Image (tube, rainbow, N blue to C red; front, side, top):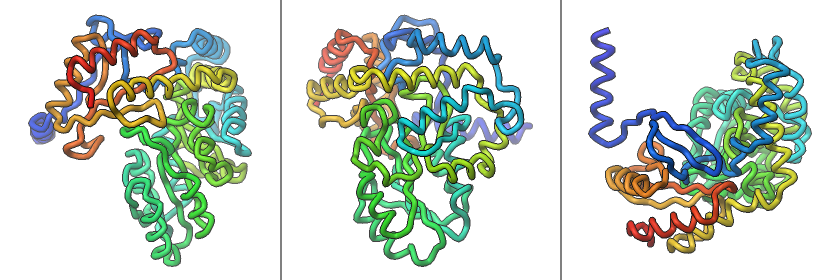
Length: 385
């Protein structure tokens, strides 16, 4: 025990010296992106992934309540045992319809989806080409697969093409993996070009649409936003961001989904989602399908902010403001909090060294006056470019 504690203390001290320690704080979220941290004053959050404000939407909350009342607080077992309550079928059919695929499979989370999907499809004799900025959970899935992994420069199709031409013939199956929307920069993957590259080399393209579902492509995600319909056979994502609930998913052909349900370990050996989470996600997706104005609003607000701040026009609700050092980014975040805004400073290892940043994310539930005041405060603090 002494050596274990010593290791932990020393490790924490090293992280603290680099301003890279992380601590949980009690956060109470309410409507219109308002929250209070550790019992402090109310702040307006421009750091959430709740892009449509659906986590606090009254219809979504009511759907969660109804599902819990009907089916219970928990699933009771894995989905292959007794945890596959009836709401799952409706949710998976809705996801498949939105994504334009034959079928879908809901996992316990986006992380569990990626660590299950990738090792199910490729193994030690296979090849994975991944964008250098893919999410950490994709790295976890790739490592578990034991496939050979090569990274290409961010959104660089020419580099991916070069690697594919050089390496494809040396491996059995091949997978290209990208984020549909990159959470720290807010840019979109070139899915059409990558899809055509995959087709030319008998490879499979997979995108992680965690930050794209509900926000771009009319709410359908990155494949539809980039004209890549039919070129992305593996559309993965989460139900915890734009959808405002919880869970992960894969949308794909029926044979692929059937394979996941019988072979993906993170599906087989995980208790099913609480019925409330599934009911909430189902209602949220119905709202995404029916309310085009709500879906378009986050990007509209992001562009208003970016234009006022002298930043590039965003394609998504995410607007990064690179500060530089961890210390300066943390200080900028603290100054914004003093003015009534919650904007998290993202630091290494989440972002590369020297690029610590504020990441502003916009929600359909933000009020126009809150965005206007954020612009005023950020300008006063000298954050405009």
